[in-house]
Image (cartoon, rainbow, N blue to C red):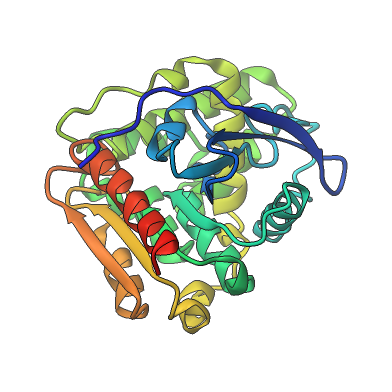
Length: 321
């Protein structure tokens, strides 16, 4: 079983004009004649890190990664109070994926994703099932209000001291309401000091609720003020709008992908995204297989090994149906 493939550089990359003035950065690694595999990063707003290239066997796959609207190497960035986020929704991202597929001349591709990328992958596959021969999803999410409320409020029962610091970041009058919406407002404040403090506090909380991993270390990207600003802005934008999906929409539409084979990988100690979401998804998905990684949380431990193995298994399925 491969832990992860060696570091690799893109053999192709580019910028793709999509709608509303957005330009997406994309890259491809591996064999140009291999099985196409799409990777959807988490966040929203984290961008496609170089390490994600290593999930894919370069001898058998043509892996495509891109930075979603507003983050990474895509433009314009979702930074500062003047950033227009009205055209940054799940529907826009799903349309971007189709635009990218057409641009690259790909007919069908395995769709993979981690964390928020799972919600986006499910939304895409449910709209375009004919384009998806298989899926690999890690740290499973479904974009529900229950999940958002868990991360922003109920998880305070697990990390009470850290949650107190998190909630103190918003005005007292807003502490009983939608905390993602309150932070989204602060992150669009004209005062740069207000925005920076809100981004810092939001990212401190992000680091906290993924910390139950055996080998956890603080995320070094949160030390970058620009990354903090973009990441926090996009996460709060999506969460304060219920991820731009109707409540229960993902679960209610699982019949559309019921026959697509999939591997779901989820950490036993994933407090950020509790295991019950992955369990409910796999119960509604006859062709899926759930792998619970006993030494992992929201990543870490054996998560990378199992996710890579899941990709390998789906590559084998597509190559030898």
